[in-house]
Length: 111
Image 1 (cartoon, rainbow, N blue to C red):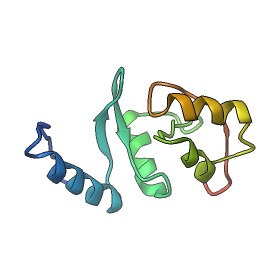
Image 2: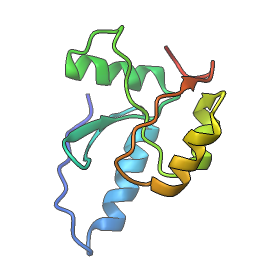
Image 3: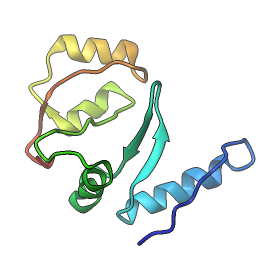
């Protein structure tokens, strides 16, 4: 089991924190991070074992889907299909930011 690391974010440690967290995620671990309203748990979306760790950590029922956070409108093309023009327009104008858009996932995204 991976050792939990807690970071106090400041300008001196920010780059190191991002690098270590990125390596941890790429190795199949999960990370907690602040959002606008709560702390979230994150994983690499294509790593089904890491996604399973989120379900286990949260005690979340398997039929309840997880949200996918994206920062730019063009990132929707990697994860969603049949994207309406209105969704793209909203994302282009309000992302990154607290805007939720519900779309149909691509087949490559785990159920």
